[in-house]
Length: 618
Image (tube, rainbow, N blue to C red; front, side, top):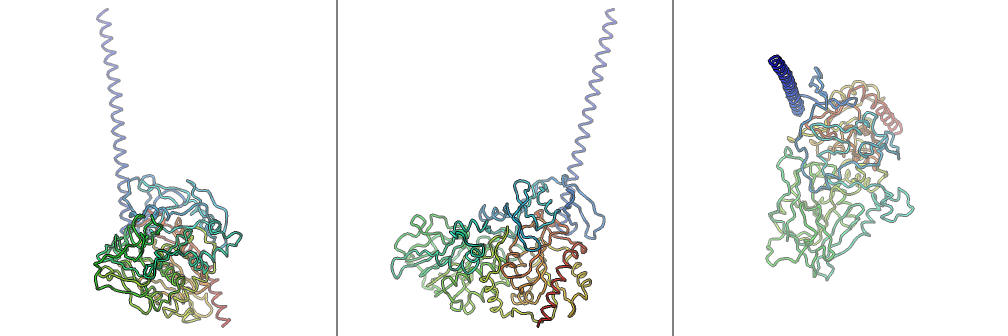
């Protein structure tokens, strides 16, 4: 009996051991299977990431669909498309943007909440649609699909793409003034209307406001280096006129220098770095913040000065004899030197300040405190600010000491009348100050404001293409195809001949040629980008169509049309393509012709009828 019981016990023990071993083997097998699956998923992720990198070389085009969270990898011949789920792309991205001069610069570019953009017919709406994360999305300026895009946050390569990210090629800290009602309170407008406020803050009223804001410093005696500051804090707009000043910027360093446009990027800054003990004046007391002196060098020189450093100081006894003396000079610095929108803003600001202080450009030198690369806009700047005297550039400043009998520090390029409401609704129209600037610029460059051939019908596409080795974003990928189809399909629309369609890269044109083309054009089309600033030279009533990536919310060129009278419309349809970037603000665009035609044809016919009526009324 005892042996039988022992045998049974041993058998049960072996049975349980076998079952336990089977369970362990099964668990081990499942673990190995899961591990293999994870390895396969990692391989799939790597392949998806490699495909995105290949797209930057033009091998693939990555399409961000609007109807589902997918990315389509499309071959250039539009065949054999494959699809990868967005959730499968999950790797850590490289740092895609350069560090700005300050944290505020990056933050100030983001689209503010609580506003609506203009609708297609130019009317304004006061309601807004609540979006994810308390972001208010413009309600009528984009289609339902685009609106859906704006409230969806998608994770591409491990980081969130949201509606308020901003292009890396507009890195200025452009301040967006919220509402005119706020300005009204701070400037004590009382019950004045919007038109009164627009005049005071954007038009010739701003010139008067600047004059009344003046404060003078260092006012001891006749030999003092008196300087007068013109400052409107609510607009963050300031300028300074100085007398009897010596500046020693010999061997000054450039903040972030480059030698060709191919090197251009978010970190480029051609301004000189602030050089301590370089500005000399005859003042009896200290000229620093502790004694009430303002920091007049902010923005004009990179990296300083700090609040504790003096505006100027008594000159040393050992200044060189070979000093370059200038009787009267406008001093201007360029930060975003390749961007014509910011550079025209800088010219406008300097021109306006010359009106404030009563200077004539014919008797004024232009001095540029930077080492900016040459640009077509240089011709306009020189002609408007110093047409009869040589320009003193950065290379001269780095070699010689300069003495100024009178010197005007021009306002920063990212401030001023055309830099307001870039990210929200612009309530102002019909601006005489900007119109006068436009007309004088055309006259100065010997461009008639009238068409060269009154009966000619001309449609111009401002094209965005790589130039000087520089790769750019927001390219209209099938631009040539759409232009060819329009040229064919719209044949016979115009009663007085055929309309000519042309696509131009304005980088290769002189300033005179750019202006001439715009004046002669009846329709202007272009992807959102700095080249669209050329709508400034169009005739009032010219049809302007600006093409946007769906989530790009930036209104500088709409504002110009409101100020000057061109008929602005936006287009956000088509497919946004992620090429060389994962920023939704910088995506390229593919537009199916049928989709474009349904939008553009009615606008085109209206523009042609307008041109025909003008000819009939001659």
